[in-house]
Image (tube, rainbow, N blue to C red; front, side, top):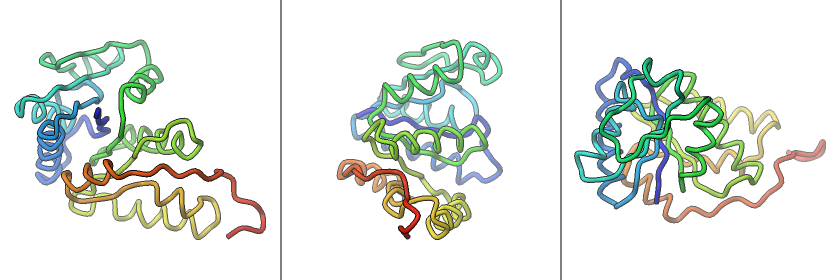
Length: 192
């Protein structure tokens, strides 16, 4: 199993965010899985990678040349792939991974989460996508996602594809039992 983690290159203001990144990193390593992530040594990105490595696991980073110095590429990874663009980064991370988890983060984290979830909705992959919801960080986003269903833009089954948990071990356990949704994306004019 190779788990791709999307998260902030910043640590955020709450210690809970870093603690969750460390707990997720340990959980990945202890189940014999490999971390795939953005390749940085700073923020939550660095915390999850360091935790995996300290627990004896493997960590694969993928970082664009333009961000190698800004995000400060992690020098101690099992593998570090330096690619030409963000598009290449996301594609390589998707290709290498068997599942995806978003920790707290900013615009980049949200963009990566929504893109990979959209790919699942469209049937481009059949891998689990989830949120490690730390201290209610994603509560308002989850409410908005429910609203997209109520407004007729997202099928309930596609909304339910997003696995949400506040515990990294139980989140990854749910990935082991994941069954992909086989349902057309489009909602017809008479469907609710």
